[in-house]
Figure 1 (cartoon, helix red, strand yellow):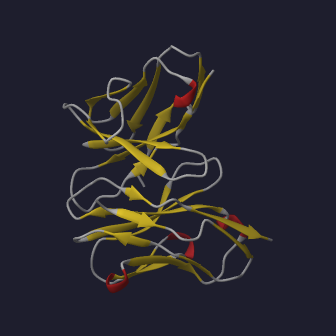
Figure 2 (cartoon, helix red, strand yellow):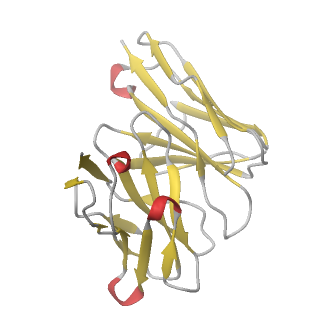
Figure 3 (cartoon, rainbow over the protein chains, first blue to last red):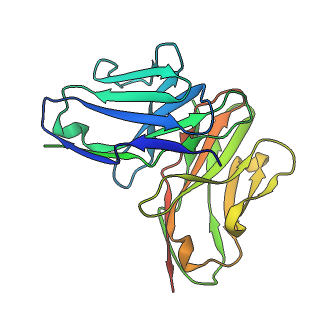
Length: 116
Length: 113
């Protein structure tokens, strides 16, 4: 299967600072990338859909000014958590898909963010 | 809006036991269905998928799932589980032509040696 690399795997930051998480598709071009948030013992909640060269589409209830998404190329999307607070601590996961209707999503290994 | 229900939150089985994990979805049109597995400390991996055709799909590691349209279900099965199957299992759905995955809450599977 295709490989999606997410970096960093874990990060600890102070309240008020910003953190950038990268998601790269290593061996294919990803027209669309998705960002999820996973709370302990809960499912993945879609935060936003990122399309190369255009603005991200955010799910209802997700603050776009807090969670900045950039999809500058067909192999890279970034999620920046701005002015992080302890309640932003979570597990963030990205996925990438090729274009088309019969494609599956490939997931990154996730990033554990802890805001102290 | 589409939704996915996984009724079993935590399943504990002995090795060699048979497994069936339930998944029901709610969606008004044609769907694509997926089962993903997340082993401890690892990323989500695709077990199997259904797009069209034979409703009984076979995936990796001996898993299979059956799409029953009339029941809006896509249950995951394995005839004989192994200790290495210990993981979190997620059912997911997209609408036809829609790339956004909607996940179920997941089922934690613990296999006792």
